[in-house]
Image (cartoon, rainbow, N blue to C red; front, side, top):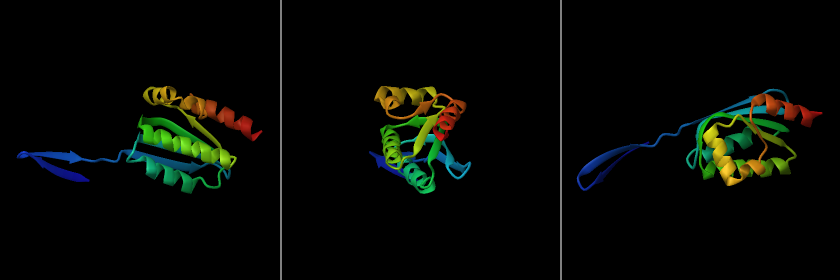
Length: 134
């Protein structure tokens, strides 16, 4: 969306860009891998939450790869909190892995690392999932 704003005779051009991509792959009947790329903010968070809920309704285990997530706002944190609460109610395992340093700091400062299941790497997340499946 492009908006031209005129203020005191000056024209400024602003472009609102939605910069997020979500890829969802079902590995088997109970495990789904979700990859988030770009920004998870007030603009993109509702879309991510809707897509996530629709595409992972039946799954018992969901891995969220955040290795390409560059930015997360408080709106993005709220989505992760809501998805975690929903997962617990549905007896679903939700594991977030491969957080970039800046995004990890946001999780740490907000205290979300104590609420969510975070793993440093995908292999660490997979080991945790294997324990859950056993």
